[in-house]
Length: 448
Image (cartoon, rainbow, N blue to C red; front, side):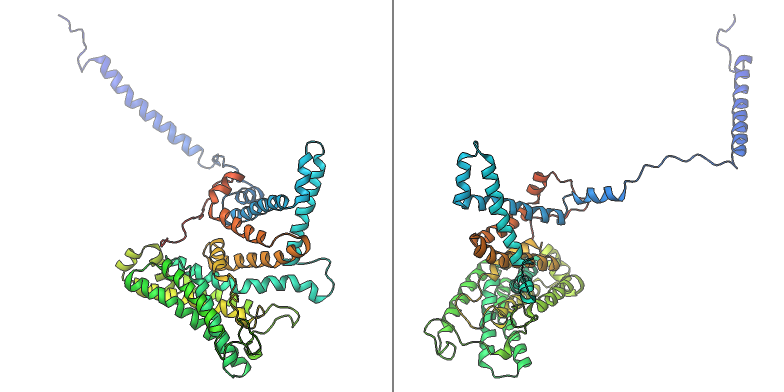
């Protein structure tokens, strides 16, 4: 019988098996020949995607949720809300909205007039007045801005430094108060030559602030007491100590019955930079120098590395061999030193020359806002203090010329900080794209 399935050695299978290697070999020869023939010819390149133009990249990054864009838009939002408040607070403008459906132009015209006048006076009082005549009048706005800026830089740096270390230094107000007390006492009790007198008064103010910062620092390090509670209580102690010491014999002005001290000697006053008719003084130069020092301390020094490590994770820093207790004490002492220098400028500069119960104003609490607005970065704090100083200087003119309440400036400051602290809100309102390297953080410290 014949097998229907050919055997493995059948001629049909053998011929097919022999033909397959021959085809493979022939294909290999053809590919080799083709490669040899095209070796000297230029090979086609794959099309590369078109790179976007430089202008397009700039616009895309400009409208992204980066720090600069969010900050500028936060200021814009605050000014828009402030414009609404200006309109609402003016009875004459508000009356035009009673018949807005009949004559909408009246409401729009009056609203634009009152808002534009208010913000124009804000600019003229803070930056430059085009209608000013003379050197003194032209530089007066920027002089006032820098005068208000100088102490805010110090208190803002004080709060920012503690934030970077994981602590909430709400006691900058008390530290500035003790600093102004000791600076004033050194300013009118010590008979010293001019340059030395100023240096001693500044050192006294710095030492007073450092002492008032050392107390909550050592309590935090040794007992774990929360720095917020300690610094709040020390604020009250400093305020009442100021009220008590002003009326003491040898401190109170002999020619006054109210609570005011003797004036600080002229030898202990910071020199004015643009003449006696303009208030800006050398304190602004010290503020820039202090900003550079804090930036170097945080980013270039060993202590700055330890401070940032403790602020990021105290347990990990302790495991790495860093003394957390020592870092807390030094950090709060340096923060108090900075706040004390800011307070000393309130009597050694051009703001006042004697102690009063309100001599420090609110520079310590405003320093918290400045630190938040500057995102606890030293140079950011300087720019934020400049903005707050401009708002304060311009607000005085806005109140005098436009009849707008000075409290509106405080509202603007608060709104700016609110929008800065809520970058997601600003991003949603303006439909910003996500930044490539966004560093918008709402949690600025681990200690609160």
